[in-house]
Image (cartoon, rainbow, N blue to C red; front, side, top):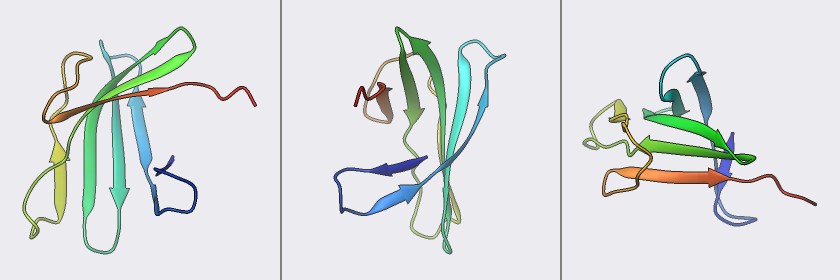
Length: 91
């Protein structure tokens, strides 16, 4: 998965691992570079043709080699949780 805000801006490559057998379904988004690994533990659902992901924001100190976020238990955004909705592009 490649994430970027606008065309031409910096893009970040994430890999993911999903487990559809859990309730709610679980997903881990992982970004690695030469200095550290960032892991966002999340939950996801498919709803009316949309993918909804709720992921804990990874945090830690600048010295940490691995930054991780806590896995949310509900689909609700907050200070340490991001709620993302992906819709198919019709073009």
